[in-house]
Length: 89
Figure (cartoon, rainbow, N blue to C red):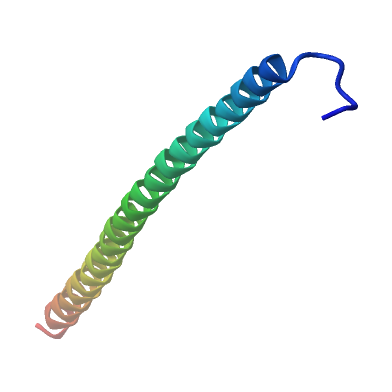
């Protein structure tokens, strides 16, 4: 302590104030980190939920397209059969 020229009581107050300030900043940063971790967790869960919904909708659209193709082919086949019957009669 002899390298400092200020009184020891003043140095003690300054060091204590610096330590308290450091601790307060560290606690604030920890709170911010925790809140951001929670936000990331929630957003990840939300993103996964929307991803599942999108995949389900995509598969449903594919099924509908397949069904539409089947119906279209069936109608075309029926039309061709009707033409053949008309020609035969």
